[in-house]
Image (cartoon, rainbow, N blue to C red; front, side, top):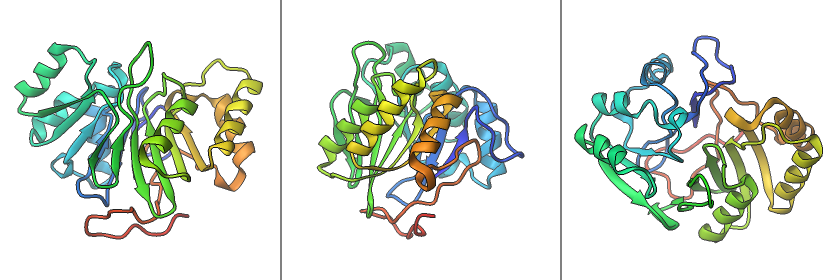
Amino acid sequence: MIILYDNNPFDPRLKTAWGFSCLVRGLQKIILFDTGGDGTTLLSNLRLLGLEPSQVGIVFLSHIHGDHTGGLGELLMKNPNVVTYLPNSFPGNFKQAVMSLGGLVEEVSEAREIFPGAYTTGELGDGIREQALVLKTREGLLVITGCAHPGIVSMVRKAKEISGQEKVYLVVGGFHLLGLTPMHIESIAEEFRLLSVQRVSPCHCSGDRARTVFRKKFGADYVESGVGKEIILPDFEYPHSIKNPRAR
């Protein structure tokens, strides 16, 4: 997987901006998780990494905030032949806008399988409704979150519940821990351990303090992140046609 849009730097060729997006390859279809805050930055970063909008088969939107949905319009103008999975709570005019650009909309309420080995947690949370993407690898689950407004621990717990898999290989994305005390963040890191989370890669809205705490708690299993970062994953449980190099 490759982080395409983030407010944390990594690859100096790419632009950093507030928001999040990543691309996952090696499954039945290439999945674009969230679209960042603007299409110009998203598509520029995509192409600088040698990728094209036409390669995307599925767009998975975590929640309604503009820093996660802002690039969708320009992506659809380049590739309208994608299915956009979005929470049912999204406004009707947003869904209409997607369809007006030729995109197909799949509304998500409950947890379900998207295709073999790929799941949505369904809409979670009592305030900002949000879904996470869950993918099965040979070494455990890959859980991707946009901002984790419903709580990162509860989202990881839900991912395990719906997949029937005990081990979590990697949790990556926004953990929404800005402003929390080190003690509170440490308690979340401990809960990750209790949930059998092996590796972590907090980015976007996780905050520098959280990144420092998780780096200390997870040591070699902490994965540095930022825009342009490629995270090499284990083989997927249901790969399409290519094998993923073993994690490093």
